[in-house]
Image (cartoon, rainbow, N blue to C red):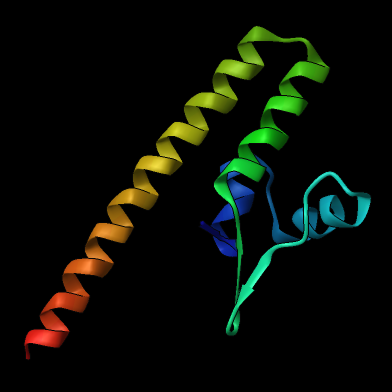
Length: 93
């Protein structure tokens, strides 16, 4: 799951406000709420970027979107690993 705060970067928009607009327009599904936090499924964000690329018909745009998604996915994996390591350290203390 992708935190709401990182979803804008994931799909290549500039702000959270744009995410809210995309949700209102029905282009993105409502985020999943977990306690005080909102998340998107990575598959929903990927599907949106693929629809966007297909509608533009640009292979170069699709490649940029995919590269951006891939880089962010790797960053999210790294953050998750750091959180898990921090959690293990906290539990050990």
